[in-house]
Image (cartoon, rainbow, N blue to C red; front, side):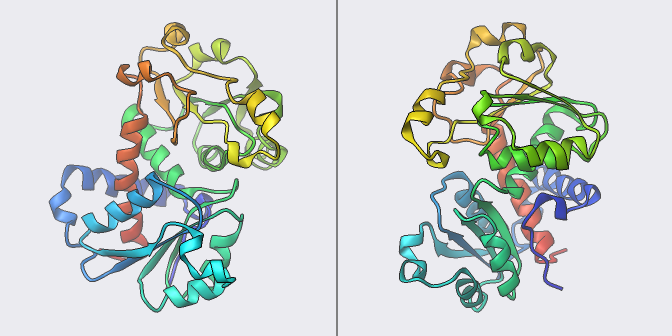
Length: 305
């Protein structure tokens, strides 16, 4: 039976553990997986710009022995002529075995999954959801820390529009004794629905603050995000808030020696490049882990043993 992935919460914690285990096995034994998807095709339907996510999906499919087709912007698809998401999904189902879709409109990948006859993976929809980034983040935390339960995780920057933040908070809320620290300007606080429906509903220990420096010493994970120009309604607000939090070596003086610094990327200036050589910087490892977890997910949805 066809199964898609639109929201991270569609996967049970046991299924996430299974995907992490598969990804770890791929890292340890890549040759074993090099022919797993031979003869299969992935369609990447990207209606919004992306470097990492699109190339990560493509690299994942190639490393599984499969092939890739698709487009990298709406203008190079029939959407430019007014074709609906449903019709695009039905059409592409005739050519491929699985779809990875990014779209600026929230809910578009869900609409595609309803129309398609093949699995659809949500590769990011507006400010809403980004489940494969969340799987990437969970694999990163698991590999860097050895566990996910019991960690104190700080999210810093744009917590209002950051779909990666909303998805990861949802996923972490299912692990034991996780504490969440939300660090942002007042205007970019986590939406109320995330606080009520996820954190409060699951009795998660959380605090909200505007002070990164004061929060740093207790964190096991620091998840930095950029202030996203493309999500703002006016340039004035963006310019006022864009440099709210810039992580520099001096700010890390009081941080734990085994802090794991993560970022979904792209980075603008919120993490100083001087930190790239700090052993606590995990964001480029995170990029690599993204390829492995997507390989695991593609195999799961295609029911490849």
